Each structure stands twice: as C-alpha cells, then as structure tokens.
Image 1 (tube, rainbow, N blue to C red):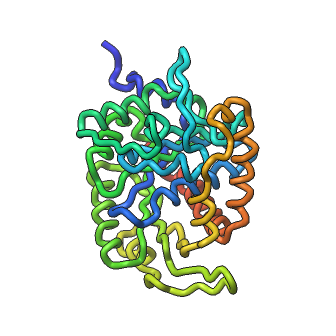
Image 2 (image 1 turned 90 degrees about the vertical axis):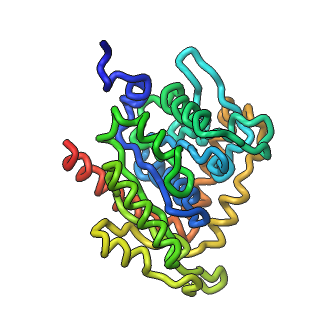
Length: 299
C-alpha cells in the first residue's frame, strides 16, 4: 500500500521548499495586494529565486489582474497544467488562478463546497509547479471550506507550511484577525507573523503619513499573542494605481513568446519605485529570517 506521504499533491510539491499561506480574518484588508507584493518581493530578493503564487480565492480571484496576466489561458502538457509565468521566458514567477479558467473574466464562480474542494486539489496535484523556493497561497477571507480543503490536501507537506496574517488597525478587523490566529493554532499551522495593512495614508504630494484608520493595532495584537510583527503598510496611492491598472496590453499568447516577461519586469521595476516596496522589503527580510526557525521547530 502506498505511503500516506506519497500522494499526488506530495509528489507535485516535492521540489517546493517553502509554502506561505496568506490569510485574513475578514475581507477588505488588502490580503491579495499583500500576497502579490510578497510574491514580487520574494522574486526580487535574489537573482535566482523561483516563486509561485496560487490564488485559491475562488469566488474573487484578483491575483491575475494585479500581476498583469489577466486574460491569459492555462495550457495542458503531458505533465499537467502549465502555470502562467508572469515574467515570461524567465519563468521564475509562476501564477495559477481560477481566473485563467473562466470563459469571460467577468463570469462569476458559483460553486458549492465539493467543487471548490476538487478545484483546490487539482491546483495542487495537477499544476506543473516544478522547483520553487517559495509558493505563496492567497486564500479567501475568514476560515472557510477552502482553508480546510487546502490544509487537508497539503497534510503530507505540512512541515513546509506557514502563514502570514493580514489585518488593518481597526478593532473589528483585529477581532477577526485573532479568530484567524485561533484557526492556525487549531490546525497547528505555524504563523510567521502579522502584517498591519492600511496603517495610515501616505500623501502623494508631501509624503506625510496621516493615521486615517488609526495605527498600531496589529503590532499590539502581535505583542499580546506572542507572535512576530512583520511590519506596517500605509495606504499607498501609487501602489493602488499600479496593481489596479496592471491589465495586460498584449495578447494572451504573449506569455508564450516572452513579450509578457518584458512587461512583467516593467511592473516589478515600477513596483520597486513605490513607497510600499521599501517597507515590504523589510517584511520579506523578516519572513525569510523566520522560515528556517519554523523548519527547526518542526523537524
């Protein structure tokens, strides 16, 4: 009889070193933008870093648009689905989302739990992820069927899993973030830390930060719950404009020809010029430093 560790998901993910699940207690806290920034920043962290980003927010997929690959299709090979490479022929930033499978980008996804579960399993077992240093997984808000399905299918590689929790400073968001933290503890999912998003507003004219939504709540939550605080991110109009306008200008087949790679690097270069990029570099540095300690604790 085959070992419980020898599953299709385990075989597909055997060359993935670190799997980071990005979650939040509620919607509207910027979880997907944090996931996109995490993938971009990890991609830029070393010249040879290989990163994948999996969008399992099945009813609200936004990663393809943020990475400028909306409208591209998924190709089938003899070894499974080929992810969309946001950096073209360089093939160091692989992306998979249900958004690539919709006939029209505006189509809604109206699925019950069993179909969502099957889709997540297929993303994990049938996508040709290959060798990755990091796989970032953008999840739906809250703790739902998708989260349980994800962890169930990834049980054979649990020692490589960790989570980042995204919140905003408001009390309601923090209450939900604590529930999210409780979920990670229940399922024994190590938490790398908390990111406080929308922590103030950066004036595009003078750069002054105004505390529109208050600030410091995420840091205080991390202190009280004895988990790392990764950093604060103010509302950045340059980042919002960049990610919101990241629609591809070329035809979907441009990914295959490498034209999208040039555009993706332009996206990365533009991102690195935003105020958020420098702040997020500190967050990524903290995440990378924490990952080995997670491995040591679980070994």
